[in-house]
Length: 425
Image (tube, rainbow, N blue to C red; front, side, top):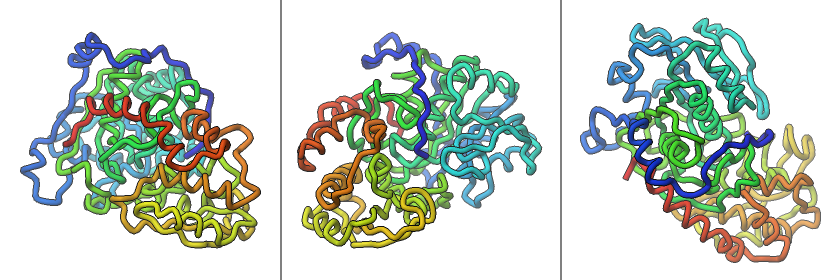
């Protein structure tokens, strides 16, 4: 999921949203709440945005020519794809599908897509959105003949997971093309309790972070859509967010009752998502982030690392996690076919675990434990963290607490803005 493209410049107001804009949004944005409130749902039952849409007889998209931005995660709880379900329902006029990175059916690896084709299962035209934004993407929506664009993709809660920027780009393109935009909500698998980590600086914008949000945003895709519409789009799109019922901000994915479909080839389990917001930072280093193993982002290492790294980490007493000396041989990506040493993260208390702080601790100790530690020459770490601050602080010898303290003022400001767009208590 971590492949850059040139940053697209948008004429966005960098200040907090003005009252006049809030008034405009009140006229253009709709939040469609479920027909039954969360209090009325059976205990433990969660209804996704798609389930709420279907339960209402697809009234929100009745009489519309609909196109869906989705991928393999857009499934019902009995793991049928929503495109297959809606295609056979006479109440829905589904005319197009839009595939992001990895493709609609998920046949492409990181940095790839499926291109333009007709879906063999439904006969629907599938349009490629990957690496498209602005007017070129608006032209795709226009060419498809849709008047309503629906988004349904499972996010994992981290700023650099590119599907939320597919959401952002599609919203901006729908605005340019004069299309209505509907977001079907799904849970944040690592809870929505809090925003964590550094906030992106706009000069470091890329496809792993278009706008200034925190590294772990603690929001659902519908909440992010509301935030994007209110704070970052050059002007609002006609937005309808179809909320979930029965979801609580403190809820982990395994309590949702929903099946887990790998959100991308290297996001195989919810455990991966739990650590990803911190360990993905190793994409910006000379160490392996575990790609090419069965535990990507949980295994980290390089040739020449031994058990001293795990010992250093365990001495820190980081909340919620233990670190095991580990050896592995990646089948692709960094150190392909070579045995490397490092650590495996074992999260034993996920409520206490802070993935971003842990990620910083991993970087600080890796630099001390291994003489071969280096940042990627393109300073990719700055794109991932959102500025030069984390890299330069670690290079200057700062400890974990000092690095984390450096982003607290910006994080506090983002949390205040974020609060305005939350849908769930």
